[in-house]
Image 1 (tube, rainbow, N blue to C red):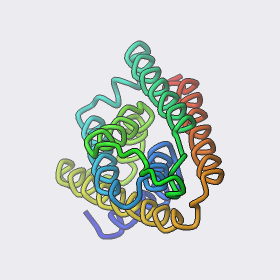
Image 2: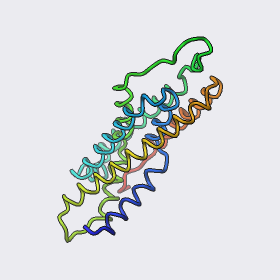
Image 3: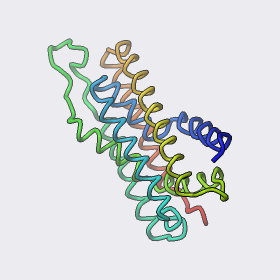
Length: 211
């Protein structure tokens, strides 16, 4: 594999990852609501979710999703329902006592639960798997061993995904100190919740690549 192939893939991946989607919205909402202590769990969930999607595409599951209407539809509706549920949960999240005005501490979620939420949002998206099927081949050199190239691309993408999610979490955590009032926090939660619900509705309207 030439450096030019790798660099083109890395540059395209960085641009795609920088565009906020459901996963990044979840990372930001957890960082705003729980601070720096959730960063590790959310980033780990994102990394494992992307690893699952990329590995599944390499194993041919992406092609199966692209051609099987039944399997694609089931996974699509599961992912859409999960995003909508998370959006509703974020919309309804309590904010009283966040600024310590009444002496109460904000409710803490278990790191494992946060990890699983981030993983599910990232992995339970048929669009991700089908996307990798369409995206990766554009950068493969057919004259070189394919498995080695795909492994290198996967490591590169996962590294960029971890850096991207970490940066978003850090930025949101930094902004957390300036958004201390419950009313502002409520607006942030409801905006994020609405966007997650919207992402779920968009997921529900997705069509197969072959459609």
